Image 1: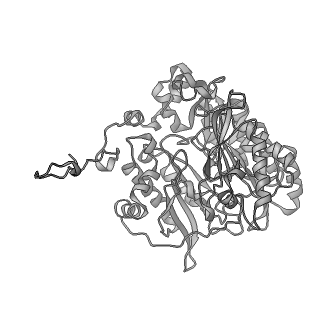
Image 2: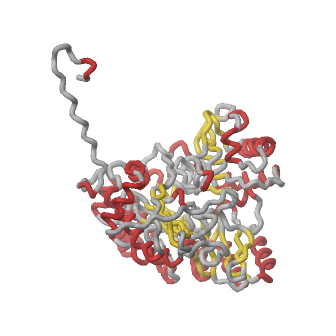
Image 3: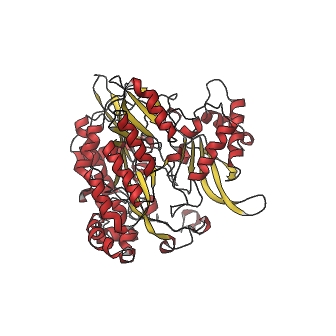
Length: 565
């Protein structure tokens, strides 16, 4: 009985504190299977499915696949069943997984650091052409994704990828996903340091290891010494950011716990200074801490961001140092952020060796094996053996001599790749969408492409650096919360009362010194058909009302709600 209800003249006793339910943290003794995913991982390590794919499923075909492998362990090698054709978005959350499954797969190729040789790009392109119906989307994590892959073809695909030093190992699943890195690492004139060696070391020492193949959830890594911070360290699970200390030494600051989806959080800075030779060990420490202390009871709370939110940066650093490293890390400086710099490398830029790199923009990352073959040919014809994927669904060719810039630009643009794109083509991204994704509610790639075309016609002189990110569901694969204009797919009613595809609108998101999640205004949404009208309207109001030097996010934060509708 609570104290306020105690009877006069009778002693009261304090209620016993409620015992907090365990979160499934291994380090605290919670080893029992707590949900279906954890039980599946306990029964068999996801890495073991490779042999079954090669020796059983590729020979027996789709119907021979164990369901626990099909919707679980296949992800450890980059394989997801794609969405069966003809299922509308209203059924996404209603149908069972087997009703949504097609008999074909999405296959993700991990491209750590975004680094490709011409031979590797050619292999990726040929696989797309020969096995994926010419599909090859560039993701915002520097991967390439195929569709229409048959399980019968997977061993041959792996053999071809591995012959050029690529793989799909741990491209998905509760594992360390692709390691993001600045695509112009080692050649940028103003970089703090080149993290390429550290990326290779983490990959060689830890990717595919049973030590980290059963994490509570996915684990996203970035390393960069880039001064424009193109890999977006603020939204990675663990991020190593290049800095220079007072002694002039270069190393890394450490951030942990960033992520978006339905509970977006920015990474917390631990304030350390790491020598390059410490990076792999510290990465393993953070991953190990996540493995042992991460929450496994509920999938919705299993990302590392929830752990560091509860612990705080100070406790996280203390446990990392005492239990996983065995030594204290020195304090270090913060990264230098510049709010006026675009976080990409599109266009023609001088390298530190006097040559140039050329960054170019396919529309919303949608390419094909045929077009990637042409990129490989164009690079080779212009003396380059290095191509890069970017965190914004773009491509870069390195090592171009100055006298070849005009030629390579013309060759790329003849294939539909723009070296000097409009702001809309340069800064619009889209996730996979309902065409292939089982989680999606609406179409994204074609809608975003149409939006780009319309805005280029309607606002041909618009030059403000506006990011527009289009997502097919609430999971934010296309980073809607940190875009100037974020569009999250949903179903809605149009003026005639018909259910149609539409988007909830987030405005004014950003990273760096303007770090903020886009705000949502009650009732602010747009049908897919009305989207070009809405975006044009709000951008024209921005142009009319903005103050000198004011960016879109700052204007959206102070604008009246009526002006944002």
